[in-house]
Image (cartoon, rainbow, N blue to C red; front, side, top):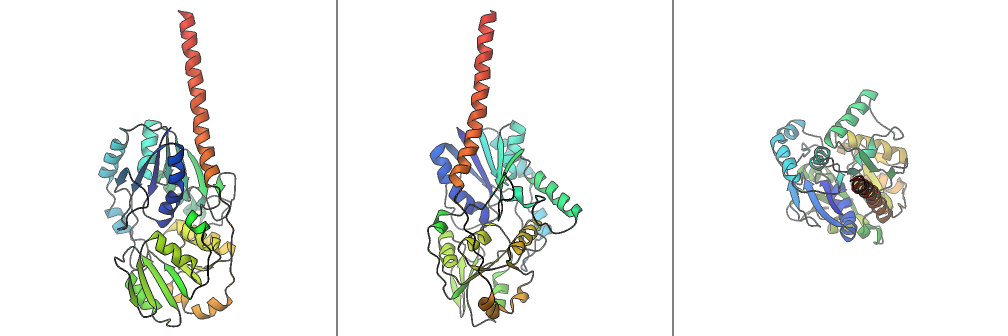
Length: 349
């Protein structure tokens, strides 16, 4: 079976999930990899067959989506060209982690496509959702326009129905023994590193490990250490931290919960998916803030904050098996019908 696994490169979660899924997929079938929107400088931890410009969210220095830069950076012409290029290779199945080029290619070529993403579950009615009903329906439509898949399997912080699974926790995180060190791990990709430095250096009682794709080389400034985005280094810092401060994405909060870390999430402004995640995390008892300035009480919070730990089960292998089996069953049924038709054709003449 020939499969295309396609992912957005705009977030840590998509890449983290692919790091876990791809080795299993490649052992089971012939699998190509497509990534779009990736702007990181670090080498990806897996081989890529297609790297497209795709669609990328741009942010301001204060943790807000910059819609003007986002729209300006969108090239419909290059997306159409990429879809045309991708149509030249035939696949039995496309697995899309909220990746639009692969999803539209599947739609145009009538290739079976399964969306395997967090986005497919984030707006379900059983989840706590912010905003008006109109906002919820508008973003549900937007998600469908970005990734128009007919079938979807989703992930969320808790299993809410038969098509929603708990997070895929990386093997590197599962096998590590967490410790409570002296530092706080910070991952707020929407903020400018200089703004983070200006804020956190005021709290000289604490040590901060700040990770950012804007950082090219590691650097120390008193109680603050800056590190470039790196899965191995980030995992080590995360597992040995006393607490985590991050955006309201999906994989990083999930890994922090799995490791039993005290957690504060600051959702990216004007990013509805993160607003939905923040609502779910708040429902679980996680502290949610909307401005850096709200973290003025970190010393007191570190003493009094409860530890919320969730032991997410390992579901990766079983999930992939069920997806691949569903494709094989349909393919076998189709072949049987073809064989039967051929037999009837021979008998008639």
